[in-house]
Structure formats: structure tokens, C-alpha cells
Length: 112
Image 1 (tube, one colour):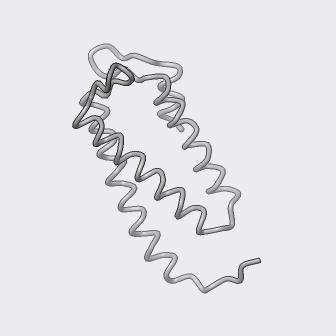
Image 2 (cartoon, helix red, strand yellow):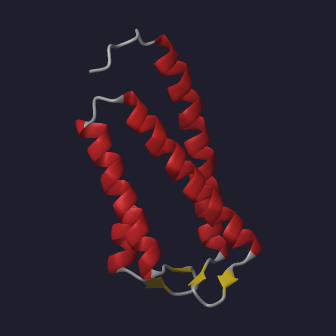
């Protein structure tokens, strides 16, 4: 969510990065969903699905940035953004592994 707010209010940092408004909006929405699920959701399955969706999204952004950094002038992914997506992807994989081990230790709950 922080990246989304940063990209909405500060679109361009000269010689470093230029964030697209749609990217910032997607990051902001994903951040809001993640925060709301983390604070208010009691269902571990929803959190796992959210993590899977975010991991897939970040992986696609990383692949798009590495293969087609200027996709038909729709969006532009700079090298800094590729590093950002790579770090997020590795972080999401690590969180997924930790979450998998952690949820395996939880007692089964009844579904209502």
C-alpha cells in the first residue's frame, strides 16, 4: 500500500524511477486488501489465496519487466522496478514457505 501511495503522490523521481498511475493504483488496492484481510479475516484460506495472487502478480510484473519493459507503450518498467519486483517475489515466496509450516501446526478448525 505504501508503494501505491508513493506512486500516486510522487510519480517521478528524476534519474531513479517513474511510476505509472495504474501500477500505483494496483499496489494501493492490493495493499488495502492485504491489510483488511490481515486485520479482519479469520479464515486462513483467504490469506493463503491472497498471498498466492500477490506472488503471481509480482512474478508476472517481474517477467514483463525483464522481457518486455515497454509493452506497446502501455506501461514502462525500469530496472529499479525490476529489482523491486524481484525482492517482493522472493519475500512472498519466503512468507509462503513460513506460512505453510505455520498453518501445518495449527489445529484443524470446523468450517461453518
